[in-house]
Image 1 (cartoon, helix red, strand yellow):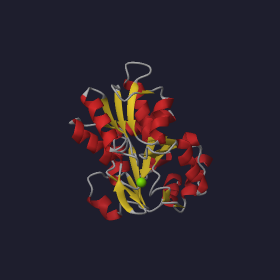
Image 2 (cartoon, helix red, strand yellow):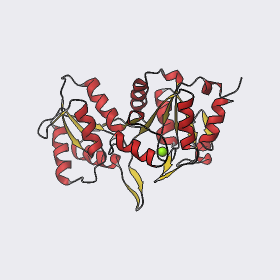
Image 3 (spheres, rainbow, N blue to C red):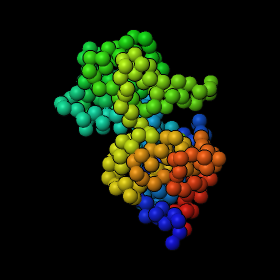
Image 4 (cartoon, protein in one colour):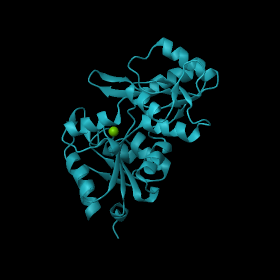
Amino acid sequence: MSETNWLKDCEGFLIDLDGTMYRGNQAIPCAREFVEWLNRTGRKYLFVTNNSSKLPRQVADKLSGMGIPAEEEHVFTSSQATAMYIKDHAKLANPTVYAIGEEGVVAALEEAGCRFDEESPDYVVVGIDRQFSYEKLKTASFAVQKGAIFLGTNADKRVPTEEGLAPGAGSLSRAVATASGVEPVWIGKPEARMVKYSIKRLGLIPEKTVIVGDNLETDILAGINAGIRSVLVLTGYSGMQDAQQTLHKPDLIVKDLAELISKCEN
Ligand SMILES: [Mg+2]
């Protein structure tokens, strides 16, 4: 029996985007073939992204624009996961929220039936916000001090941009945590809840689901935290040396998605 026999039984794939499907605005070789293979073989899949700023449709459009087939329903963002968390936990049907974030966060919260309130919201949600300000930090901090539950869409401290490593959502959440004295509940990868919500959306079971990504500290750790199998692709952030040194060992390491397809078939 091959060491990767479990792969053949996998029914669902949770797929990272940056470093796995594309780099910047460039599709990674075989990304398209991988999605076509998933479709052809009837596998379920979700593109699971920590990026809270975009609407699922915008993420799908970006993929399609690079020649990678994608529909809105194949995208799951940390904003959507945050909205699911609120739906799961809120005592009332229409909880109130103060959100720091861009249109992805606002749309996901609206869709979940949240109402927006700056004064005394039930929840404070912090995602990446390129219009972040002292005023917003103060509003969020006061609301959390008054008892609002504090959610961070994701803990990424930095995000790669053309200018260099820019502050990520995690840095903004950290500012609110420092100002309010309260730590957030984190939602995105590497938290298990991001994986659990993804599996729930696919209607699968953890045993038949695998997470595929390029980052040991987010994708692979998310898989480990949620108790599902993981595959590291060496087309992005983490290299073979990182994989050998880390405590967060993936179940499989492949050099690219073409190798993953062949491991699934043979
Ligand atoms: Mg990545």
